[in-house]
Length: 201
Ligand SMILES: [Zn+2]
Image (tube, rainbow, N blue to C red):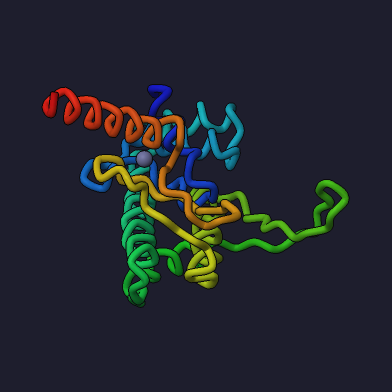
């Protein structure tokens, strides 16, 4: 996997947003990219990741089932986030793939202590493959409940297509990443200014 696509997975700021960003909507995710995402997001261990990479060969039926569910979930997330960006209503139909994963993933909440702060963490049952998508679906459900307060934005670069959570104090973040799209924009603006000056002279 290239460093560019690895980076794009981590720019969103929240798990469901990162998952929606795993590829441009028009191209499909590969099995390897799905497993790599789960590994990068620390949903699975590197050992489990290497086992799962081989699943299409050892159990193609199970791999295909999970893969189709993941694609459906990602497609819905992109529709949901696009609606949040445009301040439009989220349709029941788009929430269904999220519910589908929530419904079949058995588990429980457990108290965990992190940085001196108690919080609950969802522990999915680890038999079966559906639990792999459980954390993504729960992250999506939280964002849907927060609605506009989640501050989901689409990168201002029209060729980018990545979503992100604007956690800036001013709430005016425009780019998925200042070092990628923000910088590109600055360079283009500088070039335009330079060109028009040259033209005038
Ligand atoms: Zn961008």
